[in-house]
Length: 163
Image (cartoon, rainbow, N blue to C red; front, side):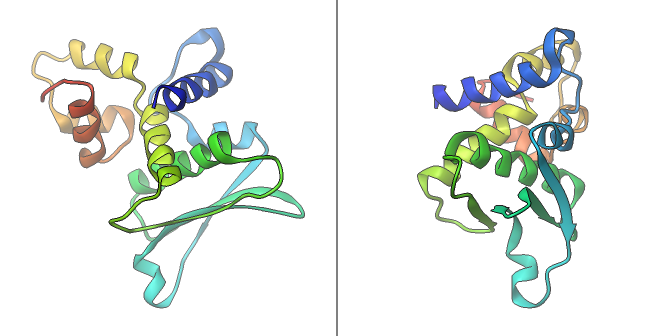
């Protein structure tokens, strides 16, 4: 996973430059800067609860579409996840990934999730914000990073921090 972490850090450094990361991370700005349009759509029928979003390349370029019915934090994670596919798995030709609510995840899906976590909750920034709080809580950190409590709890666990 070091490759995934390094790629996410590279994307953040290119976007924010020497000014330092501004929280919450601007995933739409990162997408737009890389020529990727971000759209919201309402899905109907049985798929409406199953589809988080997707990334695709068509004749006009690359676009990410997220489920408009999802929470803002879920949409942000989905955008970051799809950016993971773009930066990790895009070979310049084919690009089509569908992010579904699923228990089983392929290696590419796991890498895209890891990229999303690294992009939205960079290790250094999480540790800095964690140390700033007298009593760090998952809720406070999740709000600061613009992610769900579940995503922050998972990230803190992976970084060996408790809240």
